Image 1 (cartoon, rainbow, N blue to C red):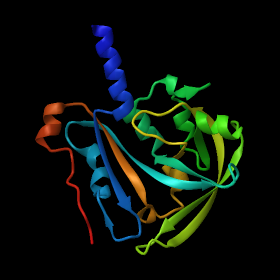
Image 2 (cartoon, rainbow, N blue to C red):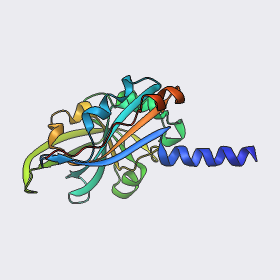
Image 3 (tube, helix red, strand yellow):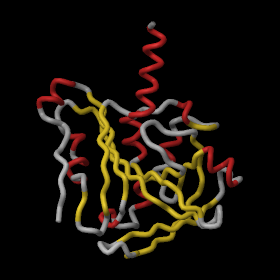
Image 4 (cartoon, rainbow, N blue to C red):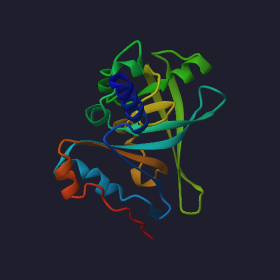
Length: 208
């Protein structure tokens, strides 16, 4: 019975990623968003909260593979993700969770095992990628090109699906307010009663 419960908890941990997960969508450059992102970033300082991390899931065109493959890309603060989600080494191929520290270096990327198998790329390869931002008329407002060095391979990461994983330092050249993304906030709780008392979940908002 205990082993079955532990297995079920592992499944939940993989699907959710942390004690609390907030999901939503933001439309960069289009005048509104369904999540109050600035408030979400302040969650880590609230009573009862141990750690938190904000992840953005964007589309990115990888021009050096698959004839311009449009891929799901996760943008995160690597150290905050490690502290909040605490992924085990089993999620990483030929390395461990410590590779997240290297992801803080500008111009680096982790890729999924699917990308390695499908496009025959290896650690050490450099990918040329394109990131487009959009205005409120759904037209391209800006385009940025990045060169990313593959530093590691992941099977998956808890709580989020992606083919490429990059640090927010690498993505800092693109104005965050212009990014259209699915947004996930992971929160680890140290004191449930404190967290409930102070309403750790900020209200969703819509700005026009």
